[in-house]
Length: 195
Ligand code: FES
Image (cartoon, rainbow, N blue to C red; front, side, top):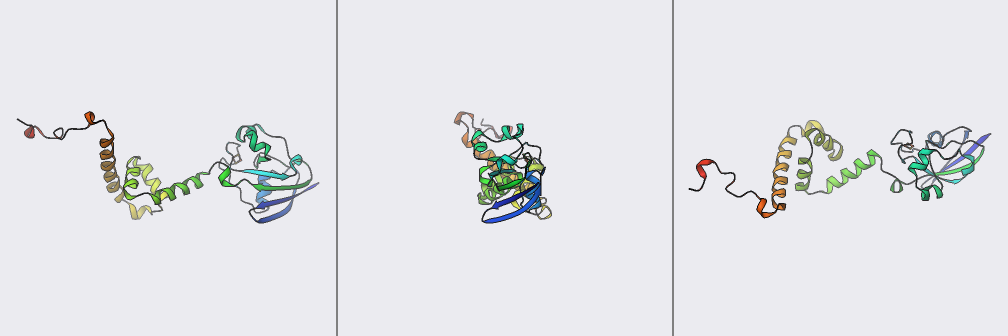
């Protein structure tokens, strides 16, 4: 028996027919609905969560992964994980993806947020953020976060990172208890010691 599926994606409606035994995840792909899948269908995240508005009884029972990943409130609201729930009986199914604001962020979404946050930072904060990272991580972060081509940035990063290190050292120094701060004479060489 066939299953009539309707997807509600924002104001859009997408309908089609899928066979019994189809996972919601595949029903989405078949009808051109893109669901994120951070754990690639292993039931280890909740990014593929959908709300079943009609036809919940057509679906397979809850898996352990769904009980673990979805709170009782979310389950009560009709949420299922698309990679875990299978259509077992024919009928009408109405589904909608859970908005990004109501589920965990995917890595790409988090990187996008970070990118926006980085853009809003003052130059001083950008330096300090970079200085706190290992060199490899700083390169990777810049590529992902700052949208700066590697070739353009190249060696300049070292310069920025060392400037950032100096800034963050200065900031740490200011935050220390006054008796732990380096005295102005600490860095003087032997010839400069007061006599
Ligand atoms: S893709 Fe992660 S739980 Fe479905």
